[in-house]
Amino acid sequence: MGRSPRRSSRLRPGTADLGAPVCRGSVPPNFFSVIAGPPALTPEVLVVSMAPWALGAAGLLAGPALLRLAERTVGSPLTARGLARAVTLAVVSTVTAALCWVGWLRFGTTPIWLAWSWACALGCGLVLTDLRCRRLPFPLVTAFAGGGMVALLGAAAIEERWAQLGFACGAAVVVFALAALVQAWAPNHTGGGDTALYGALALYLGWFGLEGLLRGLLMASGLTAVVALVVAVCSRRMNSQFPAGPSLLAGALVSMLFA
Image (tube, rainbow, N blue to C red; front, side, top):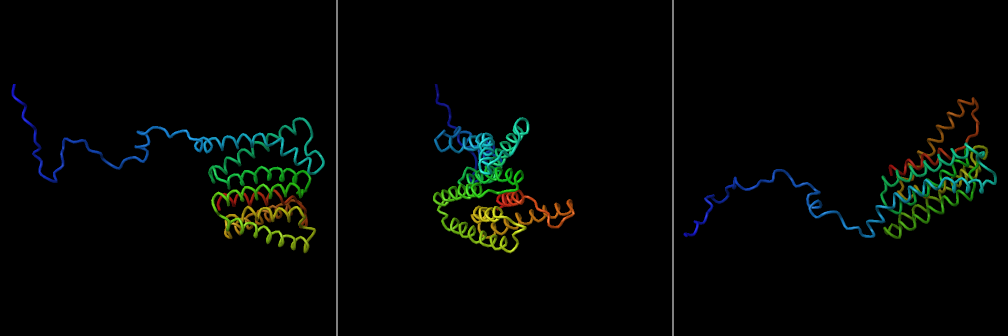
């Protein structure tokens, strides 16, 4: 039998081969990852993937602990037993877990997310206490600031952002001093708890720099002024007193999401 003749290409140099497969368009970004298969389940991947679920579950379980902590701080029950207490626990737990998830969507699995989650959890306790007792207890505000300080210290150590931590601490001291002067000048309008809360919020906001600090203080104070105006119009009294803690916390936390 004779050997089959060898096929030779008759294409001139630079001419496309119409019989070859053509790849039209760009290769999708996940093309090679699909071929290579799913990523390996390393400990780092497991921690990052399980962290939001774990913290969300902790937020759901935080309601009873926060309510008990607030009651121990003020020395009296904040809700009646029965249905009212069950509803309060459910609302505090749901809001805490939802805010933790919102923070994870914004900050990811980072140390600043832990600071955000702590601020939201203790903030819910402060809001409940201020609404029920018109008080912002110093031990609760101290825990609010102390937990944030620990989280920010961890963030500075991991990400080497010591300058940001220093600015945040300096901002907390300066804002607290200014709020204390305002309280001394108008003691009938602000209380010691509001002054301490201003300093604690400045610690969180100062982590995002001068712009984040000013934006957060402006949003917190502006929202509080709007609430004061609404209360004055509804009560027809310009010197009406109202709990300022919820509006201060809400304005500061919202500004952190946009920092």
